[in-house]
Length: 304
Image (cartoon, one colour):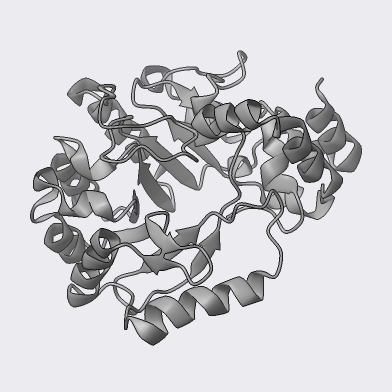
């Protein structure tokens, strides 16, 4: 049992296990039009790993079994997957609530032509990562990200029917002054630029993948993890994402979250490891594989 598992066990043993399957997150692959320094999946334009058609069919089978509250589509840049329209169509036919995570700039790539209109017509919610910015103080989007935001606004996103949430990743291990941060982002997007959005999501950078490599290179990994550990908050444990959600990777592997997937950690050996063996009953109460990077989700007010 590692240090984080011991903290969980000492605080609330029930939190060592999942309690439901409300969210199925689907990682369509590692290809992305950007190469972000914070990326836990180390995505880039040169990555070729994507979910194939057979695995997409198995994902739909899993959705039919679970009927989750949400299918959360991520990547990479899921907009660039050649079968994204087919997947969205299958989920729409099932009246399945869907959220797609976008870096905004991918929406302007040729492969994504017409996708905004399609998603709007199907009521797909969007979580837009505001990483492509020119100023970290006022969260001024780059011209490319702003162009995508304007197209989303014109399509009706950010209003009651079409949900647009915005995610930011402050550089601090434990972000503070969250109310002030939201005021700044709203002042920039809604105030100066006229871009409406629903909710601000604050995500803490996870020491996995490219971001971990950066921390190792700069000699900051131990300090970063110590800061997270010092802010451990047992009150976050019942609300950890992995307790009510799970991940299906681009190759069909199952994981407790996208960060565990990036770290090569599939689900506990005592439960199904691949979507072809999906067992909703077993996975809804599975033992969660915690490790030290899980401190991110349990520090201070938590992440996301």
